[in-house]
Image 1 (spheres, rainbow, N blue to C red):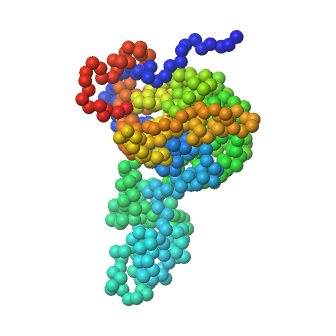
Image 2 (image 1 turned 60 degrees about the vertical axis):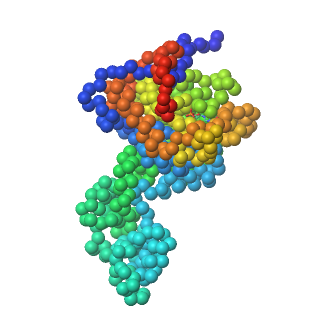
Length: 502
Ligand code: IMP
């Protein structure tokens, strides 16, 4: 006989948090939103190989996660999973662009040799727009550093023609330098101490690694949560499928991808377990791969045992998703998150291994992020939310006098990402599981994410929690009746200003 779940499944809009005691320390500036991304031996005191500074990742979708959005989100402390429904070369190029984006440490493209002329320095500066040139023995980007020359070091009208860089540069012996591994804040201390505008960073052989400029530190101050790898490059993820991973994964590793996710509408399958096994066997356990999506404890257990580094939750709850209508599968996102998070805790109790879980799809209001975390999610994946921002890859249009951005599902005819719905066998799919739509334009990601997280931190303080694990432990959740939902918004008044947004 078929199995029936005893409770109806619920979604985020049916829950509210009931406040707990807030001590004097419970203020938003004390809240940490740091959260693990990949499995780790928590019992053994191990640290996760990758953590995020905010609990938000962007969806593996054409309309959401390209290199531009990935850089904007990494600046805030989260991770984008660059969409996999494109050629391996194109996806690898996007990943490579994120990894080569300067995050305060600049690879100098304006280097000169000491025997070059000042006229050549001027010509180079005009070409690159940079007024500072590192001087390396052979003029290469990572050659042995011998000095630095800036436009302030000489007045060309007062120099004899053909004068050499070596005569006007500041030689290495008179310069402040940083050594490889220096942090931006340490570099900033030296920059202020020595009253210089830039600090060259050299390796143990005296070769130039990068330049840090005074102005880059102020960029860093705007993004105190930025998520960097050990080489100070932004962290980025990539979506993969269960068909071409043996070619796609090595190309993406080569491009610098830090983490992968098997992107599928339904992850409790032979194909996902096989892909996890093959990837870990061939490329090693250091290659981190999330899997999903599942909506119950059984699905979680299956993927955790198959070696998934994190497990994604959610079927049919996405804003552009018509899977439930088309196929009749899925589960309310709140119920699925609660059950899977419980399964994660049981798995941890049994094995000592903590496998983070991600609630994917169906986040409509900012408070839904807090609810998902309170229900046990370690982080959330959002599509519609990020598609609205300036940095998303889709077109910005004016429709009915309003700025909108396009947002389409991976299972729509527009994206044609049939691999996401693949059940093996012959390639191809006969019906859509997603729609093509517009979403209201919402400005820059920095402002939007900043506002969302401000609200999350406030609610956490209302619940007496300063960290995500503390919220998960202390949260008191209540189901709401349909009548009390009406009570939750402004009611029985004529609202003057309707610009209040979620
Ligand atoms: P949203 O944040 O509610 O817009 O949901 C985004 C999530 O919907 C993604 O992360 C995917 O899990 C899922 N999704 C993306 N495209 C489709 C589709 O075409 N059909 C069904 N679900 C989709």
